[in-house]
Image (cartoon, rainbow, N blue to C red; front, side, top):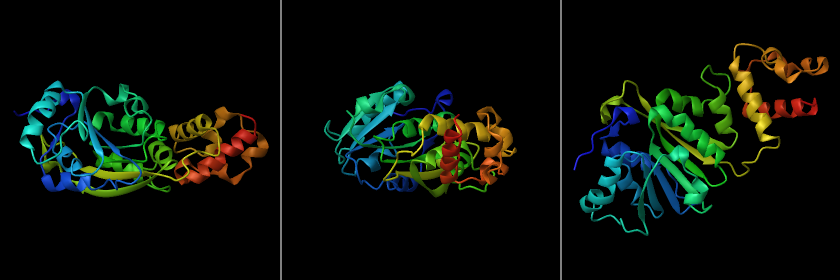
Length: 267
């Protein structure tokens, strides 16, 4: 049985075994007994994940792939443990599912060759569920992967960088060329690993922090005293040197300090 990649699902099947092995190897296996793979397709990454100790659950939206993974994949890989205790296939849209319900509030690592069109939404969902996600690894469009991993002072540093790095340590691992996919995408891909910080709570109100970061980067070329006008900055607060900076100059810690200043200012 052969599953054809579907354009409307943003599918690009990885065909290089070495790269699949390297992506699976991005997970450390520390701090969890479950792995969730998003968008497994024909299981090229899945078979390497199954060699690890953790139970592997794959979630797939494409019914043809679900049927293949249920019926054909275990027969093609009889040396792997595809018993119900070690492997399960779920049909559905990850963005609409509740991770804590599926895994009964247990810790779970997330991995995948993510469809480009929903990859940032997948990251935001992992951030939202960070209490249950100690580790996250996978393949993105290179530009998005670089943005997630980028530090302050760069033009690609932005909302995604700050909100991810507030809770996870991010590492850009390697670049993947278009030639190892079927069909090949038009751009390079990048593989990153996110490891949740030991203290992944914020010392400031999370909703306000998110709003400050998003508001600041919505006018990224402006100084903060202009882009954050909607926060009704007092004249005294505007004199703080931080407000003469642009958002891309602020580290994650600086954004936390900025949020604290705004809260103290009585926003």
